[in-house]
Amino acid sequence: KGGMVGYLLELGYDAHGCDVAPAWEEELTAPRERLALIGESPYRLPYRDASVDAVFSTAVLEHARNTEQVHREVFRILKPGGVSVHYFPSKWFLPHEPHIRIPLLNWWVRVLRIPKLAPDRKGILERYCEFCRTDVTYLSNREHRRIAMRVFGNHGSLMDFYIARADGGFARLARRYPMRRLSAWFGGTFRMNLVYQRKAP
View (cartoon, rainbow, N blue to C red):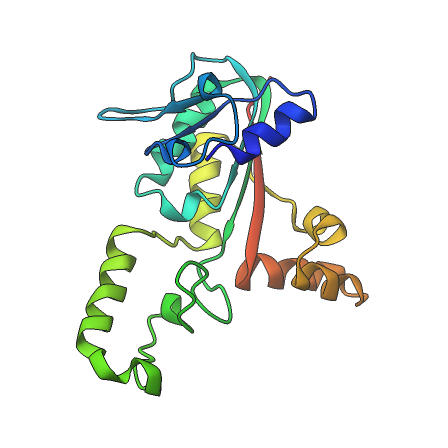
């Protein structure tokens, strides 16, 4: 809905946002001229080649059906030396799938024996499977890294940065313990991942 664009504009950045569907029409939180639609056929971000310094996405990559194309488009629009940063739930997010909050759904474990789900087990199962087929594409961190290496030639994790600065419960808990590297790996594998790539200058 343009929330991140509005926030970055308030901080003084020349920010623009795009999406495949115009969710901002429901409740606009940034100037309309700063928001644009992504072309789907062919897939294309609505910006010129080498025209932006940085690309940031939050909770986007797990919805992309064309993750490598997304990275190639990000690479295309970045200026030399530009960076892209992506924040998204990991494939093995615990304790539940983060969008519909079904325990272990992303692990493909059927949990339809929960009493409150019992009345329509078959229908519920069909709806959850449809959600997994159409709304999310969970790649492993290893696969995200492979794609980034193919497109950018580099890939890095910002989980230490995330743990040091985030307000979430996991980050606050991880700050209490001395094994920061292990916490960063655990967080990136079983919670949210924060990765970056840089276009060569």
